[in-house]
Length: 388
Image (cartoon, rainbow, N blue to C red):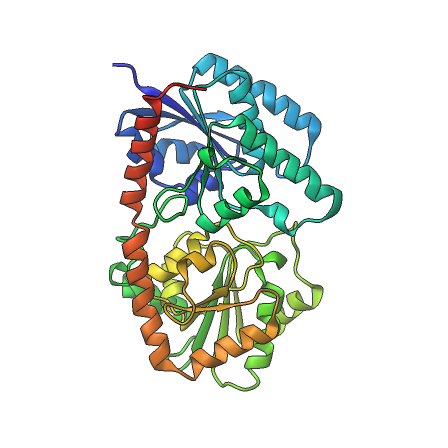
């Protein structure tokens, strides 16, 4: 029996090994064969083995690089003509543009693009106009657009970039759901916490604020550090843990790097494969980002029963309901971070209520198994309809 073939295309392997982890192997069991396509790096071969998928290299960049992008388009057309996939499914703006163009040219029956964020929202002038044009081309060449956020879908529909008939949100949103058995406080070995507490000299009396994500200006790190400097003057035993890799394209203010290095109460930790211990150690988890698609780290923090502060932006405000399971604040505001943190420091009962409600809300709406099942059913049902 012939198995349907799917191309999944992303700019980098991070989408496959982190954002979409486990999805391919699950859907393969439903009768599909996967080919993963992205820029070659040291990790992608292991990802392909783990997900039981084939891998093909395609050099893609996040920047506007016309010559490289044209070359990538021709390479991808060659791959499609050779492999003849029934579905091409893309992730990230650049992969979407190249992938949907190639799939449209080759008349692939089903062409799906997932919108997991809109970087163009923060852009201005000519650059923003170019990025909007690229989005429109991607949507035009696709047969279906998956949005991982209902608010984001509403925004794009309102702008008139895509028709409602092409737009779809799986369940309540997200790109992969959340593994509730893994992100579970009860599943975390307590012995993992002791070495971390010892290494960073954390005591049971410390009040820990934690951020996990890229160390980028658009993530609100400048404002977070400035807020912490204010707060530690008024509260004893306050600690700030920053976990994540540096983002050269969106550097922090020079003084912020200096503060992070010199403040003994700020703990800087590189990217971690397992973030559960840091979530577990947090009294408050905060994501003060300027823009998001549908941030997985908020789902993970909710599942780990964290008390959460995040900005009132697309994605975040679909998981956190203000004063129900967390606090929503305006982006780019040191003062709002200060007010929210002080409110939670001074109200332990409120923190406790938020923690329990956060886990319950995720359980009810974002189960990973349910998400995978809905996606696989969409693939199967969609293939029974005629291509356009």
